[in-house]
Length: 464
Image 1: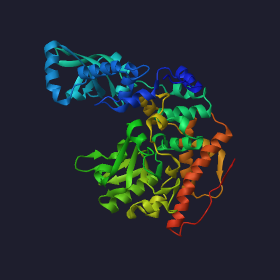
Image 2: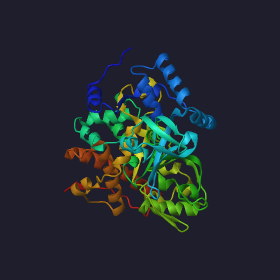
Image 3: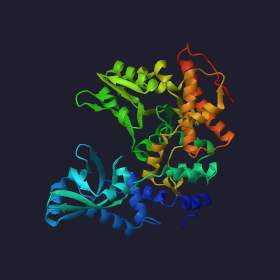
Image 4: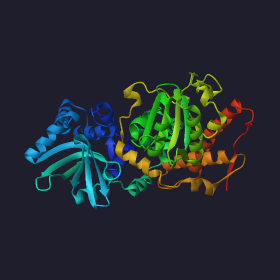
């Protein structure tokens, strides 16, 4: 049965021809031993219209031929020296030795860190220096200097990003069309969700585009609360239950390595109701400091980071509403600390989103941004300041400093996602600010239920 192409989808393919892919193909079939975003690219390349036995055989042949297992590394090195060349799929990385004035190539599957690479490849694929790039590389062995050289390279993920092209393309779509593109890009079917549900879904991405924002989402199981952070962005890290230690989260004094908050765009604390913190006093103290200032110290090491956090957990619901009006009751007792929870900028109402059940209903059958491209766009948006749009246009009436900062951050994140080109109408800005006020108001209400010292207030604002 042929899928009917919608008007926004056709326009999307024309405006973003190189990064628009059929998301349904990648969701139908994954390639083992490859990240989802790479798997999506390969499936889209070999299965143009549908996943067939023929295209799956092509993929299987490609992977078996060019994607070696770790245990084969010495065998491949031997073949490389014997024959003088080898082709493989890997996540190649480049680094520069300033003292020697040399660019080196890292080939993880071969455990090689000092290979060489042609300058023309580095110029064409700048992301090799940033986060590494998955691709098919043709390697040559030079018998004179005993070095491995990358002679040819075909990326199977984005290797160069032009943010202006992305931002300029946004102007061609109305808000409804853009919402559909974003929802389809994260693998969900935009036809299933109302505009309100789409906005709530998209708000999950705020920690990926806005630095030092702290959110919480509580809701029923099965709504995809952590999917984004596991599969859409490789700049985020999910900690799922278990025990969290200061060395892992902040800084490991033994190995002298920075913790998760120092090296990721976002750290998601999943199954927060089942999470334990080792050295509770130290961990919570440093976490509170970081959520307030973006700075923490451990030993003699002081770390400044723009990492955002999101606390994710389950909440008992009945007929789409929380059973208990005190939502924080589901958190571990040691986290029910007003000084910590007041540092949360917003509360996403996870109970408003339906469970993802049937694939044919909830997963997208449409085009969307390629996962690796979308990931880098989200990462790049962190460099842009959209808070000015809120500060220039909004005057807070009933709100304290922490409320103002929270609403500004959350609204800024929504503006980045919905209007990355910076063009918006007054009612669209109001929509983003209203959502941010609602999210912060939910925190304020819960704090009042928890601690009488937090007064019962209604946050208000006006346009300048």
